[in-house]
Length: 420
Image (tube, rainbow, N blue to C red):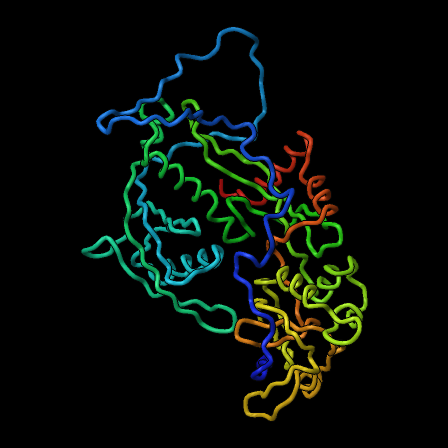
């Protein structure tokens, strides 16, 4: 059986643009980054003639006065690979989330092994790098058709790969030795290395803006339906005569996995065990107001859930909006059947609902699914604005003394960077 769809004239509230769905940037998020790693110091921009080459001033030597001390830093030295890197531009016809783009690029390489003889790395946006020149025949660009299972069906996307430049990684050796100034080739080479060290964990763990998150260390956030996960932010940095990998900690806000109905109750009442028939009704004296439904809809938009159909089959769906009517009032006509409502549909399959008079979720193709049959999948980042109590809990979780921070970084190396 397929999920019921709303009858004409029973549309819910208007969907919101993706940029507004989860609220503003959460307060108290993210950890300090780059501690312990030296960086370049840039001055004000000064126009120069195109014929003049800017050469960085080399440091004349190391300090000779004072007392030598050993300092432990959150970084380790890396060797500059002696290879040529090929930089390509990626154009995907449809607008997709970065995580989904990563999966399509992974599928692209599997489906075209004659082109991707060696694995390529991708930043989730427009840049792809490989140590093997891709064979496009006579041109520098090629369009690929990629097919991948998405949700309940197959999706086909056109992906165009265009060569941008090739860089000999020796430019990094010359740059850190003070033999070359900063230029586009140095910048691209560093970017490629950063993507290399982030590619593998990004296919396994939730990620955002270079940070990766694990549920190994987490805390709930003050009755919000959310929790804070510790994350790790790796980056390649140029220093005097060497490159280093700096590893710092960060913090991400995630949805609690499990019952969607309980998360909705926690969102409104702070208690997952309250009675949904009282707090999530769509009609009657205690019904959700349009403003309350809008707040919850914004909080949940785009969230991926696993839903159980009337036949007991579990499938993955993305929440598009919340229904204005409950399961009893939502009428539809199933394929090859007579008109019924959502509650009757489940009852006829001997899987009756316990809470038929509360809101339901609605997918982008108008499938209506009761809250009590939906389960939040783990590892999903939230962009919801945090309450003051949740922000305090977030800051307390993210603030660590040096010893705790060192232990957290070591955990991050074990969790994410086993391939180093």
